[in-house]
Image (cartoon, rainbow, N blue to C red; front, side):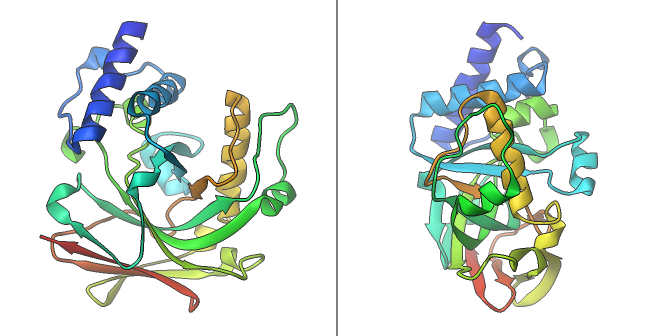
Length: 260
């Protein structure tokens, strides 16, 4: 992909973010040729926006999702602080872009995980965690669901990063979150069930993977960044007027009302 086409796609995606709109069908010559080009353009989008970053989202953390995406490892993208909020939250459904609800553990870092020659270990990741919250990502894509381009273009859009609703803090998280059950309720009825173990065996495993991925890119992760570690309950398309609640065991919950 030429520099000019990559810059053009970055301009389009940044404009879509600013205007909260979808772009429609993407011309084939604007689709990044590789995964690496997609991630590079995602970085260009962040530069153009100049928004304060919240951290990162991770997706494709289950075998079924990786098979669907035709990838062999997770995918990820940048997130923005202006799209983070606290539970209970309310959103105008009409203002969202094909919203998908995902119940996730939100992990905030206490210290930097900078680039280095050796790979990070799980022990180091555990010691770098400041807090863990129950969370819901409302995934949004700048491309309509019926006109999704090839994966590298979705990566350029931050892997459909959207809104992030923080629920209660899970204070005693060490050794607990892998076994913690997660239930997604919609209008008071359970609709999806999962657990922390559904996310690569442990919600911190995707964080370890991302730390080593960004180590390879030469920037690492920073203290204060929140990493949304992947859905425990899959993707749920939410409709106008619905109320969703995510229950993380009996210790934390997240609630969102999707209003007209």
